[in-house]
Length: 600
Image 1 (cartoon, rainbow, N blue to C red):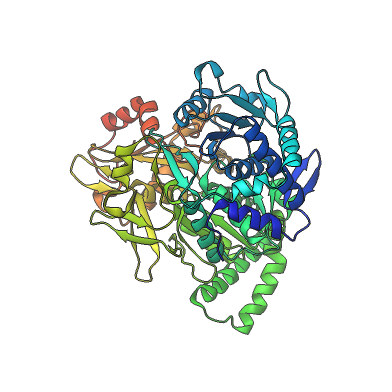
Image 2 (image 1 turned 90 degrees about the vertical axis):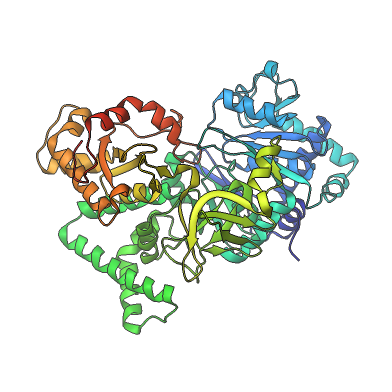
């Protein structure tokens, strides 16, 4: 029988776990495992320890930490204390952290380090009574070890208290408040119940077909509902989880951990794709031909699998050779054991899905929002279509409104926005959650996302343009790192483009082009002509009002640190428009009359 609360799910997972180690973490140069029994004990002691600090059912407890086993243990401890977990991105600055703590009225902050604890100014947060720190010491904080000790003493006195109290949770009880990253600058606290998340976990476990011997590498922020739901799904399935280091360590972590499952955002796959093709371009001609031949075999096999046709004997033989001679090296760079990737958070370019599937590394792309716990649709291993986000998961209904907006309903839809009744009423109008995304179903029932409703560009001529597909087309170029299309209330559309400098500088070197600085390289005629040719490719087949008429090349990428990206790496268009206003105005003032072949 499916668990209906996260507490029921947690106890079932911990009691029934069969692998030697539930969690794996790096300590110095070695990976250390932690058994399910140890995890259960630490969750029990921390949950009771929070009770000793005065945490009661319904109280808010914030979590501010990088991915590590203590994060998940703390989450389970908060939930089994029947309190409400408030995850906070560890990358956020102090002002944003304090805003979340104040708005959620968090009573306790659990964080990874003194540096994270310093982001909470207690003088500004009268509701915050305690700060618990995993590592080290900091003024006016409590070490995690002390809280565990307090909980252990309580457990010794009342051995059945923790589980008895935790099992009183009901599906309708509030489990978490998650503050959205806010691409428009407006962050809202999404209230999700135990039943919301448990229902989504149950649906995803069936759709993804996780297995008890799976091992996942956790690389996305646990503060995000996607990675958190995946963690619950892995626990539900009896799978183990390894917590790696910072982003720059992911390639090494993959090799050392040998995961079978990895959930990531499209940028992860873009980087892998770039690295593979950079190596291919640098290889001898004979090696390049071997790779191209193997890729064609992989694509032919991929077409058979997706169509549900058996592999012809000759193709199966060619695939075994291609996998052994070519794709084995790709798999080894990923640890050698990956059986599937899961992609979310942003649209996955179609060519990436096609390439990795051809290489025997399928990516299951899904779609959802924080407000939907999060998964609404998902591609399956046996029901997959590139360029789409799949079909609805069990118990989720989706319909397309007259204006193209995607509407959803089901057991995973949020309880509402914290302290925002007006926004809640608008989002749930008519009994459907209004996603703010625009899309449509194809004849086979696969959902395609066109754009964010708020991101749609309306030109001064009254024409609507969806920028995300154009940006994705631009990023298909090996010379384009990032791109933002603009043009709202303007005569035509423009693009701000960040070149992929490794590829661009190699291209310039092949042509013996030498420039003293990056700025000079971007301003040179050959480079301008190169990117103009990319624009011609992207503009082909589009209506005149959809074409990019002029562009600017930027000498640095958009970053979270500069406030241009959300913690989930979505572009904050409003911030970018404000930051580059002078440049944008100059493009419109000095650019074109709207002719498709005009130059900047």
